[in-house]
Image (cartoon, rainbow over all chains, first blue to last red; front, side, top):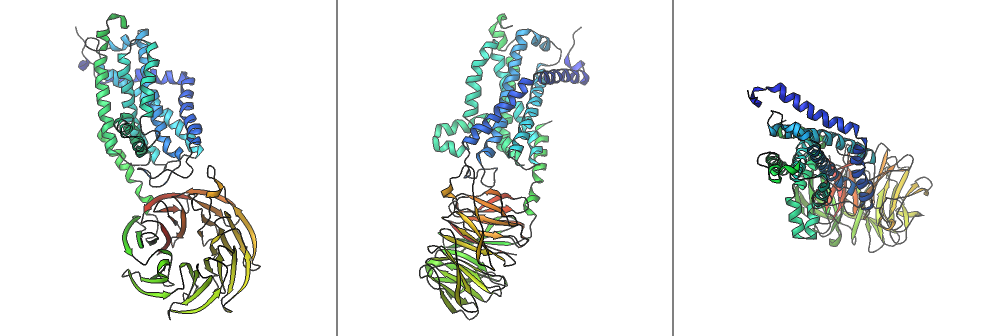
Length: 276
Length: 326
């Protein structure tokens, strides 16, 4: 007798989702160092990098800002993006680990469809990143980087979309990575260029002054789109263009990851049995 | 959560942000653009420029007539004070002003206009009804700031090179006393009860608070902004709230407006605005403060209650003076 996903019903889906999210949250709660490091990184950028850069005379107006802002205010949404980027990479790192340890196999042999399992995993990672983001924003608020109070509510849906997108990017990468050791290299080649070649640190017009190529790279970088989506949402504005591009990137990355994690067709198969 | 729901939710929540800008009584803001020879007219509810009107050359100081129906404009390079009818937005006539008028002050009864003539060291007093010069008073070198006390007894003028406040007894039509302040005093303003005179010194970087009764400096305030060099702090425009709570001081190229507690004389906050903030005006309900930013060519809108900059509105080149009509 074969068991198909359709015969399992919603309860099974819910149980699987609960299990995956629960495991991720449990892992998060038990790894206090991870939470701390996720906070320390953006706070260092805010307190040290941005403070040194301060621009006390203000940065020219760029949407969604309606007036002049100090640099700390500009960089805050970029750092929110950074938290989610690192978190996305980190949870995919855990997938490489899971694969090495064999718990990935256990997950993937479940009768539920692969796309559901991977999406559940993404949701779990995004939930964790959102907790980190709000902790960071709370400290930033005390430091004096304050957005309109309602903005913290409108930020939430944007965080879900951007968190899923960046998680999917990590997942796609993890599907192509053979071993844990290789991951550090990917961090260097993916995280840093993604972060620096975006609107997280400097507005696009500033990049245009520096060069057309740099400007183009920054403009098409999906991370820029996620950061702009976050930036606008924090000021209660919807940047439809950024939302569109972020959702498109999410679809592409997630599609790639689902393909990549197909044991029969994806990267796992091509690499042969040595992968696990 | 589906994407459509997300979009809907975001749009819904974005809608909640709108009332924040519309919590003030409707008024009209007039801004003189020094380089464009125009006047920008801003609607306070939408905070958008609704009209731009051509005026005389190099318009700087502007002030409303006592009944609010006319606007007096210092057209510095035309050596005239222009009178604009605000209904028709037409210049109806010029007042004799003496040479190079930059700043002026209207007497509380709205009859006399005290004009500082930078080039020939006099204050020209014009009767706005007869449109004739009532009298002239010799003052220090490069007269600039002008204010009239609420009781109409005193007219004060600051001279940029002499570094003094000249006290003109309006009845006697003569300078009866002088108060020395820091270098290059450019702007001055009485408190609502007339007991104090606030004077900013652009080069000295200070704000002097002078007791009207003794005409002595009671307190000198220095400004300090983290990350901004001291030489950029050049205080100019002053506005005081009628409730005696705050004094706002525009700090020129420091791109900040200082908020001074008018009771303790402590600097409470510095608000980041545009480049080279120059003059300011309060809305009639005193919920908002408008500041002209000369170099960046915009007007910053400040929420007085929250002490937050709400928005910056693009106007012409080198906005200088600002006046708000209820």
